Image (tube, rainbow, N blue to C red; front, side):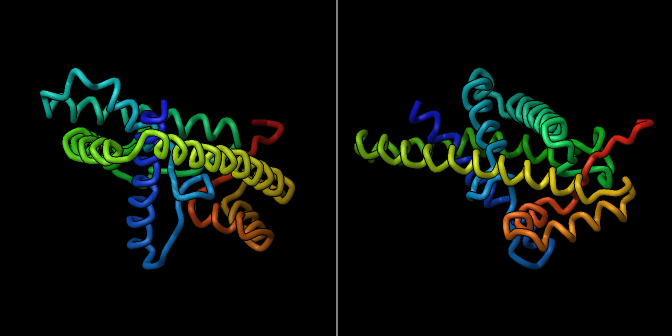
Length: 215
């Protein structure tokens, strides 16, 4: 179980670093990413676990592995987007401006990226990271994983509270459901908390989803 968590957290951190690098280059300034406060994006950790354990039988065929990673990553991102929207009544990212997308939740560009990452993970990263822990005494490795796990759980709980408060504060300020109102709410929230500002900067396309009496 410690080895499983090790794989999860390594790729969660690498995914976070990748997203920070991509977004920071686009915005020309350092921009934190992810729902959590810490430097990790769980969706990449889960994706790595799925590819590592569910796609073993495709390791000898790079083309099939690419296709399966493509499909697995697409499904995972779509489900994550859907569940986050239902849980917090907000759309966290939107690919509607991409040429090929499905309901703005996934796009061809990101899905191709998942396919490529699947190949890199299986043939390069996994052998490298698994080799590293062979040189670490078991007791030390286990202690490190326990500490990281506790920090990770605390981060999840804290971030959930912050996001829930963000939702409540957002709804209390929304008077209508226009784009202008949505931007005004985000402006108000940015001034209330440094955690709010971090989250709103991480997800610039965040939109609160409000249903009026007729809809």
